Image (tube, rainbow, N blue to C red):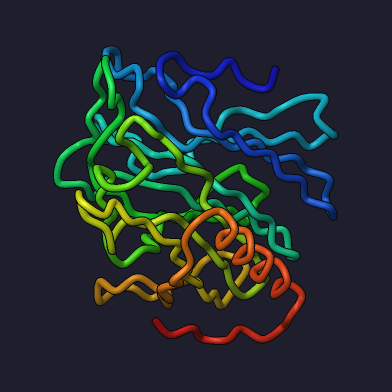
Length: 243
């Protein structure tokens, strides 16, 4: 057993295990609740444990998102990638900018509503600590639209691939849908880095990313996009994408 997990809706949801082929470290990330605030049994954070001995023992639980003190703020579906230089990259769906919290009902459609963004954080010390969180998506996605909720709950870990000088992410996004069409698309963004640890100038309030709207829908589209991202990992150049 790596972690005892959490009670409620989050107890068995989309954990991911990633290995660093150079160091041999294993990184297990998931979303769950450390139960530090009684009564908020499903207030989910992005959590990580690391094994440095091939899975025999696991380090202390680390909270990746830096807003864990905010009550009733959900964080879901982390994707993890290891850069060739050992940097640990994690991206996830985040409700911190939602004008209203996600609805957590006892009956269908259960978890519903709220607005998500994609957030990112990195670690330069093998997952012991993480830097500040960076907002990747330029627009919030309405989770009352599409298959995220509405008693379907079809959502998956954020797609992520890493190079030494950049991180590439893909996610499901409902910005082009409405309550009638319920459309969702796959969107893609790149975060270009100038050092192993993230150093991005967003002092003007503009996140340090370049967003490209990918008109790709459905599972096959996402699979093709991830194949493309993985294929770019070995290329030294980073091309700037335009929406």
